[in-house]
Amino acid sequence: MKKFFVAAMILAAGTAVHAQKYGNTPEDSLTCLQNLSVYQEFYKQKNYYDAYDAWKKVLEVCPATSLNTYIRGSVILKTRIAREKDATARAQYIDELLALWDTRTQYYGRPGYCTGMKARDMRTYMPGKVKEAYELYEKAMEYSSEAGFINIPYFYFEGARDAFKAGIIDKVGLINAYEKAIAALEGMSKANPSDTLPAAMEAAVNSLFEPYAACEDLIPLYTERFKTSSQDADFLRKATRMLGSRSCTDSEIFFQMAEALYKLEPSPESAYQMARMNYARGAYAEAIGYLTEENLAQLPETDKENAYLLIGDASMKLGRYSAARSACNRVHELNPGNGRAYILLGSVYAAGADACSDGTPIGQRAPYWAAVDMFYKAKSVEPDLAETVDKLIATYSAHFPSSDDLFTYGFKEGDSYTISCWFTHTTTIRARR
Image (cartoon, rainbow, N blue to C red):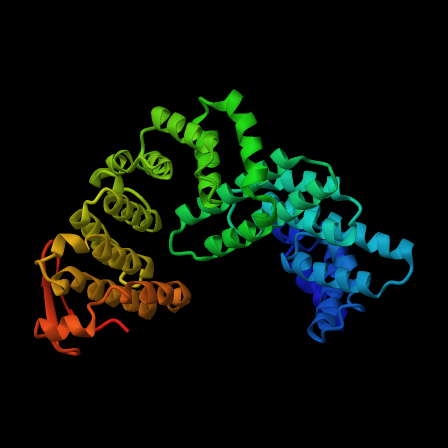
């Protein structure tokens, strides 16, 4: 009676769409619905192993029934693979798993995601097929703008790393793969700024790349590539960003590429790179000159903070203490929790102490109180800086006035004192120990 009822329903709903979804004939549809019911019941009970036969029949007879046929099918096949002891049978299930991604693409699209996941399953279950998996990943990356692509760039770079270790691609190929993965994730971030997942995946890719990104590895590669790519702005952008992120900015090739990029594209980003280049060379005034307010306004927030820190430190080295202090204040307007800016500000106060001299040891040494105040502030906003800050506090506390000087000039420890010279700061009177 139940079979008759199901068959009647199928015949009554015999439209073209229905036929496509549940099979091409009424008999196919009956087979489809019967096996659909059986495998779903097993699946609900988490008996994935025994769901296989009925699920396989659904896939054969009515592959367009539901996306769940493919999502659940992956679980069912992986369960079979995990339990199968016979090598031939296990290989068959692996082949079925890989083919499942192709069939899913046929009926439900998303070729980038499906190809990337197929490559990942190949990497997992066929570890010897490194080249084939990498080629699949490369194909998947052609669809990097596809919705739901978020995990694929990370998997792709895993595959590239495997290919590099196996000698299939060289270091240039690995760097190219890294740049391609990062570019895809950055594109996702720009398309949806509120989504934090691309940034998290980018951090994961950076972590994978870290062992292969030492300056001694990157500099020779970029030096060679620069010979033929000195007019390629896209290459120069990626290369200078890479060397900058790995603290390779004191290398000659970084200077050359940054300069070439700035000539091709005098953008805020390339101006920032030029500033870093000149700073590393000790050309502090030139470095500051590139960081105009117009360029600074268009930099990303993190780069903007670092740019103002550069201005502050370069200004201090040039003896422009008020300008250095202003730069530190701009950092804190952007991020009040930036401890490095407090460290720099304290160093600026100490460097400009002589300009505050009033002819007494108190006036000349009072700026060191302000400097130490800033160091304590740095430690309070960024506790991770404590080790560095404690050394600075010990160093600069040694420049406090002596107890005898305080007594001689009528000052008492613990009282308030206002410094008024090229900066104004109210602090607490302390004697050196």
